[in-house]
Image (cartoon, rainbow, N blue to C red; front, side, top):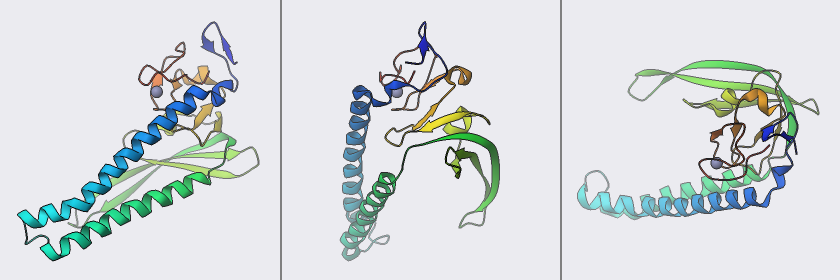
Length: 197
Ligand SMILES: [Zn+2]
């Protein structure tokens, strides 16, 4: 255990195989599956409901096929995501660069907005270059890692990155719910899962 007086020391955590963390992840996945089923049901029913109140928007005879197409697309996308995720392998790497890319995004109404991509460039221990690309207001990896940081990627976790030098980051990220926790914490203050330390 890379820990001294309740504070983590540089090193890899032996909690990556903690059954409590595995159980918390499984619980999250189960909840996500339930919400997915609810979304599919709503997608199936919504066009029929819309056609009843606004037959100009969706003709009643098109409502059921439209619902089936949308629900089918959601199911296919989630199956594809699951397949892609199952091919992810663990690796160890060092952050070599951090880049911000700004693209002008033009929507259908011809109004444009700037889209910012946060790219964390890493080199794995077997020499491969990888780019971790994030978009949006909360780029978790970008905020958590600095150039020169050594880390391990654990694909079984929802936040899959474990830093080697945890004290340097100043906080511990929960691998179940991504919340930042103080270094002295033993469990996540949001989901109560054990923290990697
Ligand atoms: Zn948590």
